[in-house]
Length: 238
Ligand SMILES: Nc1ncnc2c1ncn2[C@@H]1O[C@H](COP(=O)(O)OP(=O)(O)OP(=O)(O)O)[C@@H](O)[C@H]1O
Image 1 (tube, rainbow, N blue to C red):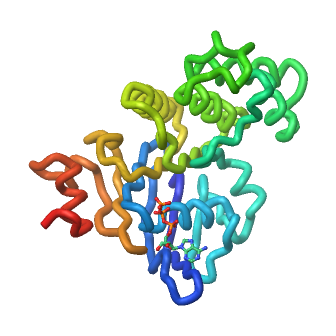
Image 2 (image 1 turned 30 degrees about the vertical axis):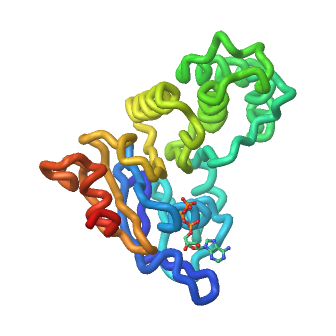
């Protein structure tokens, strides 16, 4: 069973092709970086994976469940961290998570136990009582990732989750999310920053609506830094 399977997927905004017949798979428990410059089609792909948009052509499976055929079951296996922060800044970290758990029908002791578990996983248990407004950018992001894990999704999508963070916070979040694969969670991490990708990661490079490379980062980069390989592939390096 694959974590994510995308087959022959296309999407256009009028005459503008945002995704042009793309196919790729992410194995269960893999960390896959979706690397692409601005305008590559990353957000469009996320909007299709979350069924905000419906693709006129192509197939998507999440956790082995076909999104078109069984949208509710497929979406139930999905967690998402959006590019823009969506915390209620006037609530504490625990209250933000509690509210989200309630929306998923998680109540009582189960709710408290799950909140404690995800806060521990993201190493922010000591912030539980603080208002979201008082957190730094990195801790806000970790809170959002913890929240996305409350319903124990098999697949976690993150859309440029480190935007606006300093180098230390970026590194810490990248580490935490890599660690999530240890229990079999499949990760799709959209970014335009090659330094967030590790040699062992699965890597899909998207550019101008097409996949330019698909494999393990170490194979794609060869003997040069990934940043150089990425710039050469996308034509930014002459
Ligand atoms: N609503 C829209 N109408 C027309 N064109 C759009 C629309 N949304 C996106 N596009 C175009 O589709 C292409 C893919 O955009 P998309 O936002 O998916 O890329 P992206 O990789 O997420 O980029 P970014 O990192 O800048 O968010 C771009 O050329 C973009 O200009």
